[in-house]
Image 1 (tube, rainbow, N blue to C red):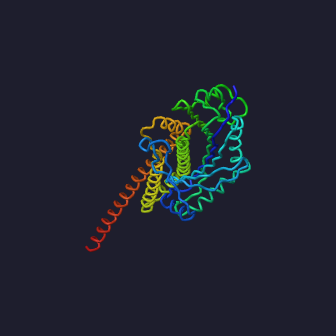
Image 2 (cartoon, rainbow, N blue to C red):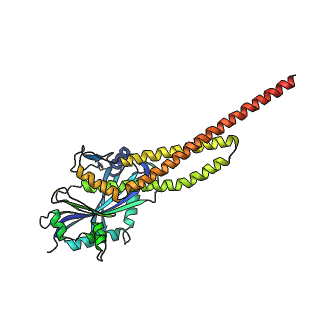
Image 3 (tube, rainbow, N blue to C red):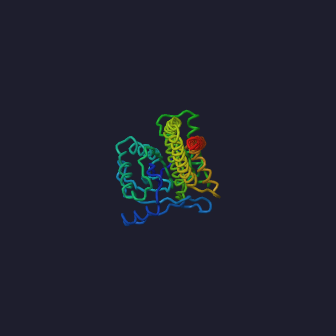
Length: 367
């Protein structure tokens, strides 16, 4: 049976960056309106009621100028999340494309925006956005951590197809894996493991770095959910690497504080304890914002897709690693607090003994 024609669809390439400790979204909206003389919007799910699923804090969405790719023109949008993440999406629409050509174009999009001739487009867009929103960035930082994701979305084929008919007539594995050679049966099963349908004529298939979405109604909710999950992964990875770098420094500082004596030991313990408790408070505050980026209550289908994405991207595993490292720092803070208290108590005892000795000496001298 012949493969169907993609009558209407899009290829969406994402690149995500951690650009600041946090972003003042109200200030970002004002900056965009003043600089570009056009309004930004607050992102919201297109078809899902807010009471069923909604952004915790809706990100600011802006529309940039289209860019010319070797494969054609792509529309560009960006979103700024309050926990410091910037997402940039390049969307290339396709019409009346044979399925094999559509799959080839998905692979070509990844190549040309990744290791091909056009990866500098991302850095140019990043610099442009950072320049516009510089004053809205709270403690801006150029983090080396970034994420990317690719979505192949189809709204219509040249004939109506159910999800079952679609899977029978089209081999999704080459598109989702990016491989030209045939995969083993077990590898194919892994690629197609995360499949979801709500209606008879829609289909979502997730992998680690790609997704296929067949949505005849044109809803973008699944796309938005996948973006949020990638943003959460990026932020958790950033804090995981931050704490990885912080723990050895913490051990060195504790060792240095323990070598100090007398009054200096008490000061060093107290200063280090304050530093650690500040770090824990900041990381905890931001990770809670990340955890609450999307609030799910009633939409069971989107909740399943979202939970599968979090599991597939290992967001919860990285988050658990962050929690373990925070627990180590909290325990170190507690130990330092006790050591600082003990050092202060020892110092006070020494001062009291010294004062008593002075009092005795003075009394002897008077007599």
